[in-house]
Amino acid sequence: MTEAVALTAVGGDTDVPAGLDRLLALLGGPLSGLPAGAEVLIKPNLFQTAPGFHVRPALLAAIARVVAEHGARPVIAERTHAIYEILRDHEAAKYARVVSFDDLPLRITGIPEATSLRVPIAVPEVILDCDYFIGVPQLRTHASVVYSNAMKNLVGLLPGYTTRIVHMAGVDESTVDLNLMRPQDLVVCDGTTVIEGNYPMDGQARKVGFLAASRNAVALDVAVGTLAGFDPDSVAYLRDAHERGMGPVSPDDIELLGTPLEDLAFDMVKAPVEIVVPREGIHVYAEHACPACSRFVAGAIKALAGELCEWDGEMTIISGPQVSHPPLRGEVVLVGNCLYESRDLGIFVEGCPPRAIQLAAFRYAMGKPVGAHERTQFRVPAGAR
Image 1 (cartoon, rainbow, N blue to C red):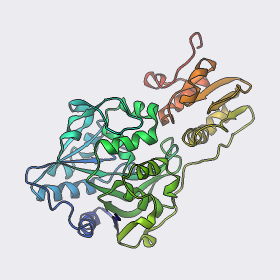
Image 2 (cartoon, one colour; image 1 turned 90 degrees about the horizontal axis):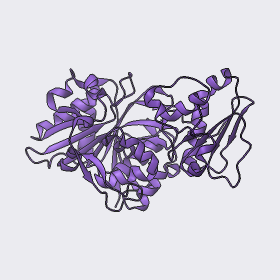
Image 3 (cartoon, rainbow, N blue to C red; image 1 turned 180 degrees about the horizontal axis):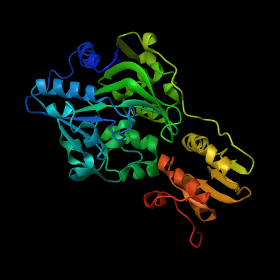
Image 4 (cartoon, rainbow, N blue to C red; image 1 turned 90 degrees about the vertical axis):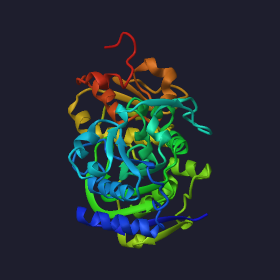
C-alpha cells in the first residue's frame, strides 16, 4: 500500500494555521472521524527552550484548535518541565491541557515483538490510554542516528531516566520498538526551522519554511529526509521499521501531495561521519566500531576539538570490538557497550551509541570539572581518580 505525505511551504506564524489546514485537506481530513470527547495526545519536540530549538508553538496551537473544534480533548505533553516555560502563556494552552510526562502516573507495560526493549518499561499512562496520537517533530540532524524526526520523537515519550535505557538497549531498534508500542495516528513535521550540524553535541537553527504531514511516521521520515538531502536507506531505524512492515523506506513508494518536493528541497548541513583527530597525542581506534558509535566518536571529537587542542595531555579513545588492545597512551576512554569487558582499562562510556551528555567523560579525562549528574554518565575504574 502506498503511503501519502503532504507538503506545503509556510512563512511566519501567521501562515501556519492555513498551512495546517492545507495538509489535513490533502490527507483527506484525518481528524474528521474523532468522536466527541476523545482524548488526543499531541507530542511535540519541546524539551529545549533555546530559540529555534523546539517545535513552533503556533503550530501546536493550530493543531490543538482543530482537535478542539472536532469536539475532542487535546493534551500537549513532553518530558521535562521546559514545556511549561514555552507554552504556559501561549495560545496553545487555551485549547489544550499542557503537561510534562514527568508529572504523570506511569504504568509498566511490555512491547510485543520488541527487539531491543524486550522487558517491561515504565510508560506514562496517557500514552497507552489516549484515543488518538499526533506526533509533532522538528527535523534535526543527529550525530549518532543520521537524522531525527517523526520516529525518534517517540523517545521523548518516556521519563527522563528511560532515555539512558534506550541507548543501553540500542537506540535504533529501541526507536522502532517505541513506535510499535504506540503508533502515531498522524504526524505533522515542523520544518519552519530545522536544527543542522553536529547535533545534539552542538548545532545551529536554520529557517527553512515548510510543513509536512502523514498518517505514517516512516513515510514522513523518508520524504522529509529526502527533501533535506539525506539518503533514508542510510538510517538504521528506517530500514528496521521497513523490515518490520511499518512503512516504506524508498521515496518511490510514497505518494507526495501538495507543494512539489523539489520546490522545498534544500541541503541540510549534516553531522560528521569521518573521525578527524585534532592534534598529535589524541589516538583513536574505532575501525571496528558500529556505524552509530563511530558517528558518536566523530561528533564528540569535533565538538571537543578546541578543548582537546588546549589541553596538553595525551588520550587514547577506543570504540568497537578489539581482538587485542591497542597501545594505551595517556588517558583512556572506552566508547560503547561492546567494550564492557574492557571497562577497567579506562573511563567507560556505555551505550549503543552513547548520548550527547556523555561528552562529560572526555572532559573528566582532561581533568575538567563535571557536574554531579554528568558524573553518573560514565564509569571510572575503582581506585582511579
